[in-house]
Image (cartoon, rainbow, N blue to C red; front, side, top):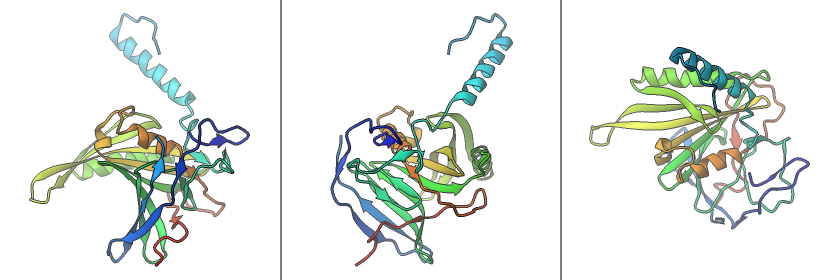
Length: 258
């Protein structure tokens, strides 16, 4: 986390970032992408149980209890009411509903609906990996993440692929492998990992793609995306929305002009 929680000081030095350049690319009828090139200067243990079945039951119970007690958003992503972004010297990219903190060499691709010029998703691209982020309205009582996990698993199976649940940096994540036809007709596979983070009446979904999708959470190629997702700040707004409804973002000021 590189900014302060409200009523707390920032925990690390800010990142100095030069001016970012934006360019609209792509010619699809329904959507365009905006590339944002950013140059920055940054660098339980269990009691012994002899019966194997009893041991497995004890482990499951401990795991369930631990999951109930864990605040998966303790280190982010954050709601705008939870952090103080004022005057900390950090350059960020404000997409309206979502604020992104970039690092050196990071590229951002914005999926834009041509009709209303609203951003449907943002993909952070670095080396051979990417993280696609989308924002949804969620019920105040929570529970949307579990529904979306089930949907992701069902979609993978219906497409002839596989999907499993595993422990991740933001709770249970979905790891999917989908069959895909290569450019020469050869059989290939699309691998992804999906993170979910529920906040006050919102849910962020992060889909990790490329090389990072097959690495462990602390792998050098994965860790920067974990930090990026943690540093996202959501400004949902007060507009009534149906749970599961996509919350669009907005283009940064000046994007696509000229």
